[in-house]
Amino acid sequence: MALKKILPGRLGFGTAPLGNMFRAIPDEEARATVEAAWDQGVRYFDTAPFYGAGLSEQRLGEVLSTKPRDEFVLSTKVGRVILDELEEGARDLGEKGGIFEHGNRNKIVHEWTAEATERSIEG
Image (cartoon, one colour):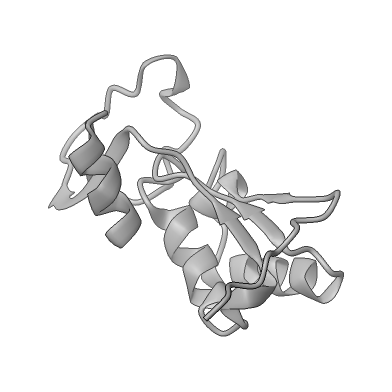
């Protein structure tokens, strides 16, 4: 079976705000934002595990899971793995410390190995 090549278009949707970047965003607002982008023809979506400790990926995935997979392009980053374990107390995220303070409380670990990348893709 041949795979259909998807071209992302000239405009992409960056999903850092879906991870509660700078402020808490209600789930419904996040969902409506992705749906509005889709309705306007956006078919390239970019996310990352760092965006709200997986919150952006979760929210984006909920909407895109209802769309035909051969109609969009999805990109993400590697190197940060989100664990099920929750962080307690203040987080040290370096210079990006306060950006995602309203995101998930899941523990973030840095793992730059091929195995971690493969696990992220499978997950």
